[in-house]
Structures are given as structure tokens and as C-alpha cells.
Length: 297
Image 1 (spheres, rainbow, N blue to C red):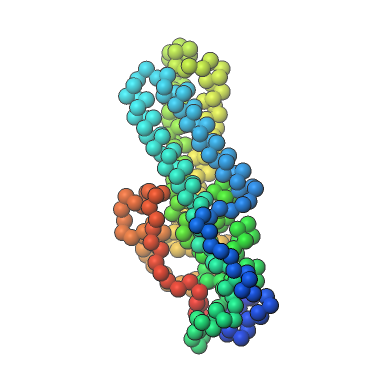
Image 2 (cartoon, rainbow, N blue to C red; image 1 turned 135 degrees about the vertical axis):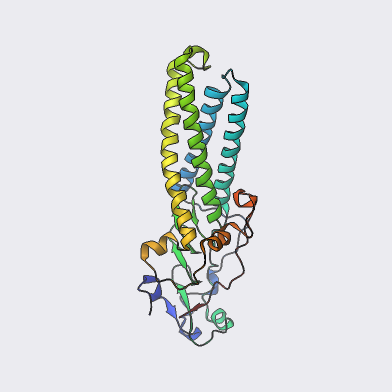
């Protein structure tokens, strides 16, 4: 039984069914070593994300920690916050500049299909928008203008799609942002209590009105980030455990892939085996070498 998903309209059961004028070899693109989407909205959102993290860094350091009389408190919280902020920005950079699993453009040619040596019962799907053979579980992104393997969604805050190759970094980004948001909110509460008990002029190098405004802004930012990233983190973890992308859940696509345990699904995204590298944005997980082009019906 075939799924009613619209993408199944572009099906070719054999190589002779492809129309050469629609997908010429000239559609091929030279693969760049650096992946970056030139989308104005995404670039602005990414800049805003970094600006807000640096603003939180400024308030935490120069309003709360450096003026503190407790050196141990400042060192411990400063080290923790800066470490988490660094990991958050590194994860954001990797999620933004990592190829999410883009399918090569222009490979939906008669010659290439014939080279696959399809067996009886096997079909290939072609994308008329990017002239590519669409692998199983791939979807076309109108912003990236590419078909993305295991595309979950396009996120403007990382100016990229969340797909097979960068989902780990996106999950880490939401997790670390959630942690620094929670940490900053706790420090704001302690700083307010300390300032109420002590003289406001002694608990900050800024004037009392400026201190209050900066702390309120940080509190507002922390609450928004905490709510947003915690929801996104939970959604992504659920998506990974069920091995079902956001688009597949939204379109209610029929499952045509092998069902695995939650632990195996986690290792498929974060790497084999479990280690501290799961939490590092500098570690690239091994996603396997499965053939992405053939689709059996």
C-alpha cells in the first residue's frame, strides 16, 4: 500500500521513464567544503542568537559576578556559565555550517539511474525542483533549495535545515542554551536577594536603575530561551527516540523503514558507542554507509 504523501507523485519505475530535458547534467553543482545558506532571514536570526548570548555573558560577568565579594562564587559560576555558553555557540556554529544531508543536485539523469542497476520491484523518486534522485525519507527544502536526508525542519535560528548530519549539533545547541538560561535565572534571583539585603551601590558597578534594567532584560531573555529551547530539546529527543522526523509526523507518513530500539536510535544520531563525545559539538558522529538512493516498494 502506497503512502498518500505528495512526494510520491514524482516516481520513475525505470531509467527510461526519466525525461532528459528536465534533468540535464548541467544541474550538477560543485560541492563546497563550507556549507552556509545565504538566506537573509536566517542570517539575521543567527546574528540575533549570538548577540543575545553575548548580552547574557556581559550581564552575568560585569553586573553579577565581577562585583561580587565572594571570589569562590564568582569563579565557580563564571567558569560554569562560560563553558556552557562556549559549547552552545560551538554547537550553533556546527549546526549552521554542517551539511544537513543534502542530496547532490542534477543526478536524476537516465545514465545515472541505469548505473544503479535496479532490481525488480525497486523504484527511484526524483525531485523536479533540484533535479535529484530523492532518497528514502528525504524532503525538499524551499529555503535551502535542496533535498535533505531525514529532514526534520528548517530552523531560521541556525540558518539551516535540521537533518541527518547535523541533528546532533542542533540538539546540543538547544540543550546548552536551556542550561545557561536556567543558570542565569538562578544567578539573577540570588543577585536580587543580595542587593536587597545590601546597599545597591555595593552589589554592582552600574547605577541601581541600570542594574535593575539589565537584570530584568536578562531575566526576560532567560525565560524566553528556557521555554523555547526546552520545548525544542524535548521535541527533538522524542523525534530521535521514535525515529520519526518532524515532517514525517506532520504528514503522518507511513513507516517504511526498520524499527529500532530507542537506544539504537540515539546512537544512530550521536554516534557509536556512548561516550563523552556525545556531548561535544567537536565530535562528528558516524551515521553509517547505507545506500541512500534506492527505495523498495
